[in-house]
Image (cartoon, rainbow, N blue to C red; front, side):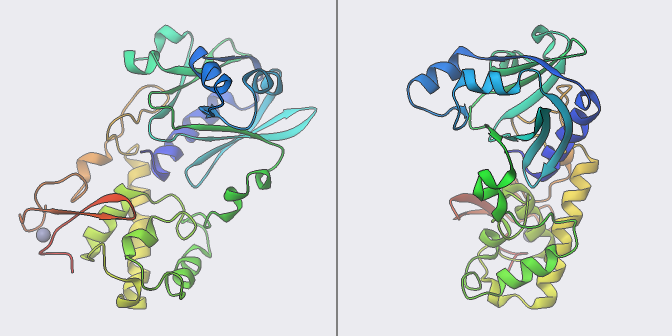
Length: 289
Ligand SMILES: [Zn+2]
């Protein structure tokens, strides 16, 4: 699942090819239309396919930004509004001259939303598993969960926010891994980077927050920030279906010490897996206490 670095990579690529351009036409796949007709909400949320098309057609792309794991497109048509996108498990954007130019068949076959831009190129959203989301919002608060997201991890105040919540009665007895993966506590850190940061800090993923000193919590937070930044520089991690808008994979996965490993990269011990917060957590029983 794409986490902060992967979403950041996509945003950095979409920005230069889309800002200032107009969405001349919008196409929605039959799969999505059928899902919505059957009362399901695949990808496009809270608005009918035709309403979605009508709202976006003719809008100019004013800004493209990342907020946590979301992509915010600021659009203008009469007035400004937002298209908020989450990549879900396998969402990917492609900027191509025609759909046949999308590099891999599996992505080509699962294109669900296509914007024809005023430069004649297409900005296409492919989503193999269809857990991605698109919401048309007048403002961020129209989808209240967005307002609950923790500050950006690189921004001032994010560390204090993390410490305050991790030491609060509600969370202090919870497993540290569950805490750092909670988007209301730290923005954008999912299973991959939480696993790596805890391994680097030699902290057992199930250790309660209250059993980690404040100094170590600060170091853990700094380690998460460093790993997120390292991954942004490496183009993100390609675990299964993450691709950037040119169909390229990131290389951060080659630097993992623990995520997806059978053996500890440091001591060679066989790794163990625990379920924490519903997610498989890999750790080294020797190094992580
Ligand atoms: Zn080890």
